[in-house]
Length: 501
Image (cartoon, rainbow, N blue to C red; front, top):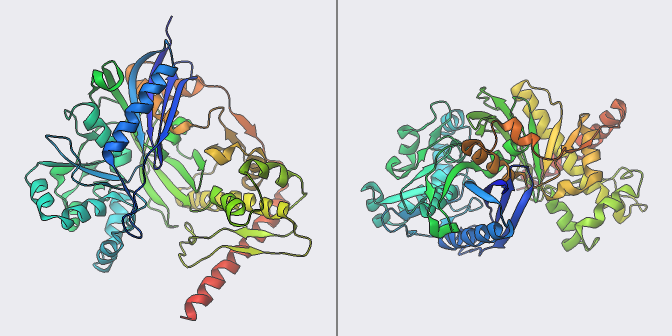
């Protein structure tokens, strides 16, 4: 008997992954392909939306082929959240390259809006800050850059959407223009409490709301993918932004549950249920998914540099040949011997928000070895994670019982054990670290009846590896104080440097 399954399309920043996830929770088929990055000017980052669609079709077909006899019953789409595409509604041809979330061209626009005193309202209503990171100013820039695009947009001829909406439009032949709350909540145009696009948020940006997609429940009907896409007509039944898909995939359905995705940076999300928490510590508020795919709220905090610190030790200093070496090196010394590494290469994010901060290593002696530096780099990820989670607890009032983890760096068992020690709570690592794709498969599977609840979906997979804390409270406090001292050194240096200007 063929195993029921979902095709999960995970459209990322540098490549697209497709997984066929079976009712058993197993990965039945997998494929991945990179696509081109375009940097037309300093600070500009663009993608070719047509290439993204072509690559998505390619990996989707390969994953289905690899899954053999699996009975694929639906599609889930998860995506890089803030990247924006504008396209002709009738021809489905993009009118410009996609502007990627990393793009900084709208910094001046964001600065003007702040000077007009608008940031508090946007923060309160959208949960976001006025930053080029988010989609709204990217749409505004494209409209301002070409009067003909603006004219056509106001005439209803141009559609706008994040990558999920673009893929839905192409897969359905233009019959559906839709998104979900998790992606809508990253645009600066969507009010978290009303759950709608709001004219008074779009007005200051000059964005006609008729361009925007219909916002539908994350687990629900997003139309039918045409037969020519994957060899059979398939319903699209789940959509979520990448970090919210990972939160769902980790089973963080209850308020107070949190996950961390360790990659180049680290993304932490804490489910706050029905509580729209306005952060006092520089965190974002965003839409997330409850156990049945319904909209709930979450706090989000980013650690700018996580795995990138290890990449720097490898590529910048040549201390290691591969990231895989770091686990044995860190375990091979009893401690970092007083060395602290604050990898603030691009400033410090929450809860400090100091863009002038720079990477600093303190506590060096003649006895310091590469193993101590490697261990200090790994420890920095755990300490920065603890700082963001502490801010989340202060904002929300929830205390953490356990932290679920995913991402490539989470494969480092030594780091996960140290993370548990620093937090004083267990760290849970799933058997499959691709929880972003798995999460949106779960959302689609709920809508197609493969799983009855989110809890049943999570239970279908293998039990996670549990890293229990094994550090005395006094030692934990001492190590946190040592880290705080190093951070204060970084902040003092940044302040002193600014005073000298």
